[in-house]
Image (tube, rainbow, N blue to C red; front, side):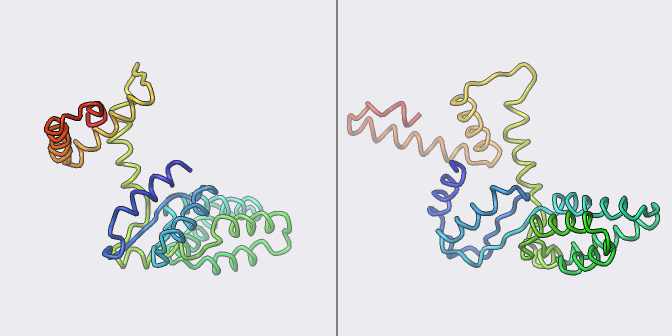
Length: 213
C-alpha cells in the first residue's frame, strides 16, 4: 500500500489533464490491479489505459496450452499449431475465442476444462488489458520491460553487488541519488538544494539544514 500511496501523491502533483495518454502497465499479480483500479477512481482518470504485460500473459496462456496438450496427448506438431492459433488470438485480445477453443478441445474432459476456464476467468477476465495489437498500433507499450530495465539500472547494478549490505535508509538515499544521475536531473536537484540552504542562511534558520541535505 505504501507504494500506491506514494504513486498517488506523485500523480497528484502532475497535470494529468494535459497528458495525451495515461497508462498503467503491470503483471498479473492479484494485489496489483484492484489497487490500480482504485487509484484510477480516486484520481478520476477513467480514460487511463490498463495493460497487462504481454510476456506474463503468454506465460499464463502457455499453462492452458500445456494442459490441453497433455490431456489430449497432442503431438509436437499439433501442439505447435494450436499454440500459434492461441497466441494470435491473445495478441488480438480475443479472449473469448480462446475460451471457445478451450471448450471445444476439452469437451468431455470436465476436470481439465474446469481448470482451464478458471484460469482464463481469473487471469484474463478483464479483456481490455490484453488488446496488444491495438496498443501497438497506437504507440502504447505492450509490456513492462522498460520499468524492469530501469530497476536493473537504478537498483540492481548499484546496490546488489557481491558482498554489499545496506541499511534501508542508506539504500533509499543511494537509489534516489542514482536515479537523479541516470535521468540527468542531478544538477537541477543540487541547484534546488543550494537555493534552500542559501535561503536558510539568509533567514538565519539553520535547524532544518540536515533536511535540505
